[in-house]
Length: 272
Image (cartoon, rainbow, N blue to C red; front, side, top):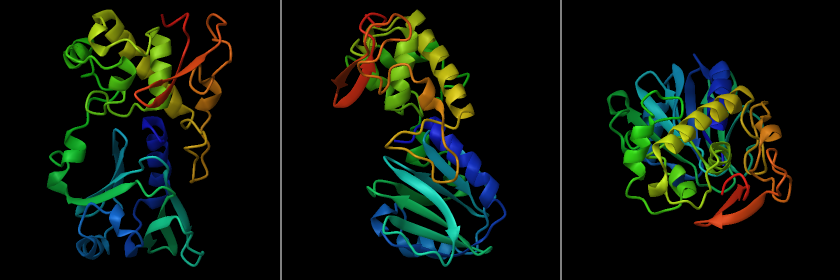
């Protein structure tokens, strides 16, 4: 699943290709992907120009002349830019024809991705954006803030870190890495986290996400680049997908467990 670093990489790459391009037509081949009325979506998006591309958490926000198109890649969504006359792949579900002879195509094998067109005054009030928590790089993400969110939660800290209403953008990969760097066992309850540990989570999140963005994200089976950019952060993963490999700190073999149904990797010695 693309997480904050991967979505940021997609955003930066698309900005180089889409800005000042105009949408001349749109084909919606899988209407269930739309959170907006399909007919209104088509009518309103045609003749709109790409002004900017923003991001909030894992949401891509395409700024058009008069609207925002918000898009979530979910598990395996990808964007391709292809020549207009290239054959349409069976997994390409939304196709924006551009005025330069190319298409912006949304490809999603599992069809979990979602799109919605909103007016510009709705960006900060629409539910998808409004409910996002602070991002790892946000100065408002403090230890006190995390403790206020954690204090009544008896769920494992790994599960709570995946809650996008608390920290926006972390997913399974980076939650494992953050907990390892913070030396916190993923099965600890969120309510048991101390202020010092909350601050470690923040520091670790910032450094890991900044490095992952710099390296173009993590390219693994469930997320691969579709825009000519290959991530390299997988070369620096300490625990995620490292089952039975030695811990880089102590040499103990990395263990894989399930935490609320999610594969979780950690070092039993460093994360007691």
